[in-house]
Structure formats: structure tokens, C-alpha cells
Amino acid sequence: MQEAIKCLILTPFDAAGRRIRDTLECVLREHMVMILGGVEAELSYYGAIVEALTSQIKDVNFIIADISRMNPNVMYEMGFAHALGKPIITIAARDSLKMVPFDLSGRLILLYD
Image 1 (cartoon, one colour):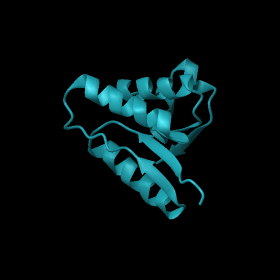
Image 2 (spheres, helix red, strand yellow):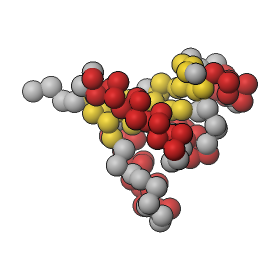
Image 3 (spheres, helix red, strand yellow):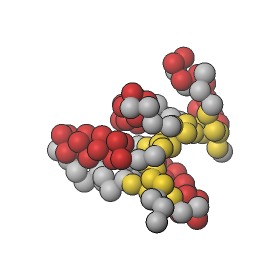
Image 4 (tube, one colour):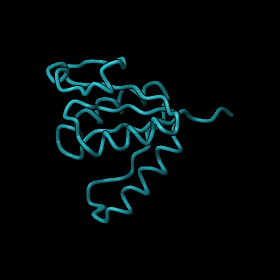
């Protein structure tokens, strides 16, 4: 039996980030992709969150990272994934493109409205 493709969606833990995650999860599940990401905002102990996320990043086949708001947590997690050589699909709101730092400006960034 074929192993499931696993994805982790990186967005800020707020209502706007939740909307993006929900939308992406619907699309990915239609294509039989397993979504990892059981880490929720109620985990308040810093070490537990970092440990859980880095473990999930190690376990996935690819990452989708929303860099619209240059959220420090998303940037850290994206950097960790990059260091591990994980494929990263970078997305951003069209109106946030001017905020993309130089280091990421050469990446393909999928824009949404």
C-alpha cells in the first residue's frame, strides 16, 4: 500500500491564518494529501510548541508557508524546513508582495486575493 503524502501548512495562529489553513486543507484532502498540524495555540509552553512543530516538519513531504504577514513563527519554521531540504510552496496575499524580504524575493510565490 502506498504511503500517504504529508503536508504541513504554516500560517499564523489567528482567525486569518485559520481561514487560509481551512481553505488549503479542503483542497489538499480532495487530492488525498494528509495534513499534519495538530499543534494548536493553546499549547502555551514554548518548548512543547517548537518540539512538536520541528517534529512535524521532519515528518512531512512538503510545506506550504503563508508569508503574507512575515510572521516570525512562520519564518522560523520555514527556515527550519529549508535547512532540512523540505520542498516549500510559498504563498502570499497579493497586497503583501512589497513586504517580501530580499532573501525570499527570488522564490516562486503563489499569490492570492
